[in-house]
Image 1: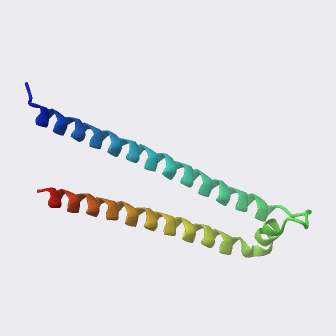
Image 2 (image 1 turned 90 degrees about the horizontal axis):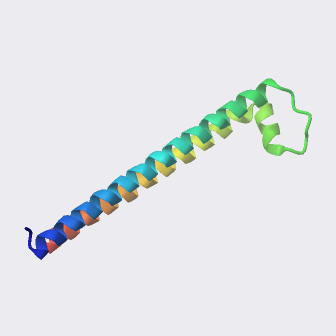
Length: 106
């Protein structure tokens, strides 16, 4: 049998593992969603560049038709990279704060 302190420590450890697994699942799901959206954008660009455009009111489509698709793709890729870098910075900051809090308690 464990004493109360040991049981509380084990529960906290299990909670930490559970939250970590939940975060990993969330990150994986968001990564898959981001990849699917990116691939659909690339596919849409390929379709739009191979067909003539009859609708003049769709400015974004006209940009893709007038060989500006590379710029749009570059903007989307840059935004995605910036989001990933921001997410990593937040993750490492939280990790650093947790380790610093652990050192403060000791």
